[in-house]
Length: 81
Image (cartoon, rainbow, N blue to C red; front, side, top):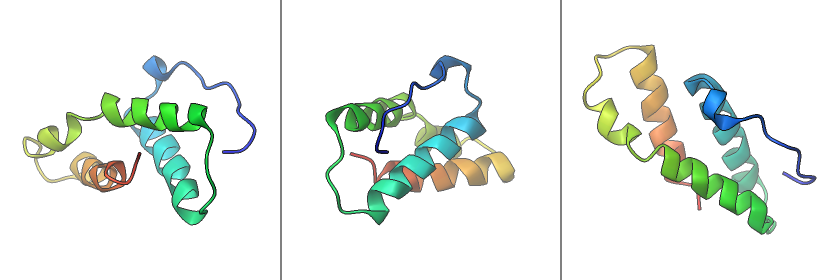
Protein backbone atom coordinates (compact mmCIF):
# COMPACT_ATOMS: atom_id res chain seq x y z
CA UNK A 1 0.00 0.00 0.00
CA UNK A 2 2.44 2.66 1.15
CA UNK A 3 2.31 5.82 -0.92
CA UNK A 4 -1.22 6.37 -2.12
CA UNK A 5 -1.64 6.54 -5.87
CA UNK A 6 -4.81 7.70 -7.56
CA UNK A 7 -6.97 4.78 -8.64
CA UNK A 8 -8.61 4.63 -12.04
CA UNK A 9 -12.36 5.07 -12.03
CA UNK A 10 -13.61 1.78 -10.49
CA UNK A 11 -16.85 1.98 -12.46
CA UNK A 12 -14.80 1.19 -15.59
CA UNK A 13 -13.03 -1.87 -14.14
CA UNK A 14 -13.71 -5.35 -15.42
CA UNK A 15 -14.41 -8.11 -12.91
CA UNK A 16 -10.90 -9.47 -13.46
CA UNK A 17 -9.29 -6.07 -12.82
CA UNK A 18 -11.28 -5.63 -9.62
CA UNK A 19 -10.44 -9.14 -8.41
CA UNK A 20 -6.77 -8.65 -9.19
CA UNK A 21 -6.58 -5.31 -7.40
CA UNK A 22 -8.47 -6.51 -4.35
CA UNK A 23 -6.57 -9.79 -4.12
CA UNK A 24 -3.22 -8.02 -4.36
CA UNK A 25 -4.29 -5.35 -1.87
CA UNK A 26 -5.69 -7.77 0.68
CA UNK A 27 -2.74 -10.10 0.15
CA UNK A 28 -0.34 -7.32 1.06
CA UNK A 29 -2.33 -6.63 4.20
CA UNK A 30 -2.18 -10.27 5.22
CA UNK A 31 1.53 -10.61 4.48
CA UNK A 32 2.45 -7.70 6.71
CA UNK A 33 1.36 -7.03 10.24
CA UNK A 34 1.70 -3.28 9.92
CA UNK A 35 -1.11 -0.83 10.45
CA UNK A 36 -2.55 0.57 7.25
CA UNK A 37 -3.83 4.07 6.74
CA UNK A 38 -7.47 4.98 7.14
CA UNK A 39 -7.71 5.75 3.42
CA UNK A 40 -6.59 2.23 2.51
CA UNK A 41 -9.07 0.68 4.90
CA UNK A 42 -11.88 2.79 3.46
CA UNK A 43 -11.00 1.62 -0.07
CA UNK A 44 -11.02 -2.02 1.03
CA UNK A 45 -14.34 -1.60 2.84
CA UNK A 46 -15.81 0.07 -0.24
CA UNK A 47 -14.68 -2.84 -2.41
CA UNK A 48 -16.05 -5.36 0.07
CA UNK A 49 -19.43 -3.62 0.12
CA UNK A 50 -19.48 -3.22 -3.65
CA UNK A 51 -19.12 -6.96 -4.15
CA UNK A 52 -21.37 -8.17 -1.33
CA UNK A 53 -23.83 -9.76 -3.77
CA UNK A 54 -21.25 -12.03 -5.43
CA UNK A 55 -21.61 -14.91 -2.97
CA UNK A 56 -25.31 -15.02 -3.82
CA UNK A 57 -24.48 -14.92 -7.54
CA UNK A 58 -22.15 -17.93 -7.32
CA UNK A 59 -25.08 -20.20 -6.55
CA UNK A 60 -26.75 -19.22 -9.81
CA UNK A 61 -23.79 -19.81 -12.12
CA UNK A 62 -22.90 -22.96 -14.00
CA UNK A 63 -19.47 -24.45 -13.27
CA UNK A 64 -16.75 -22.69 -15.20
CA UNK A 65 -13.94 -20.13 -14.96
CA UNK A 66 -16.16 -17.19 -13.96
CA UNK A 67 -17.76 -19.18 -11.15
CA UNK A 68 -14.35 -20.37 -9.92
CA UNK A 69 -13.04 -16.78 -9.94
CA UNK A 70 -16.04 -15.64 -7.90
CA UNK A 71 -15.59 -18.49 -5.40
CA UNK A 72 -11.94 -17.46 -4.99
CA UNK A 73 -12.91 -13.83 -4.56
CA UNK A 74 -15.62 -14.72 -2.01
CA UNK A 75 -12.93 -16.37 0.11
CA UNK A 76 -10.66 -13.34 -0.21
CA UNK A 77 -13.53 -10.93 0.48
CA UNK A 78 -14.09 -12.44 3.94
CA UNK A 79 -10.54 -11.41 4.90
CA UNK A 80 -11.10 -7.72 4.18
CA UNK A 81 -11.72 -5.27 7.02
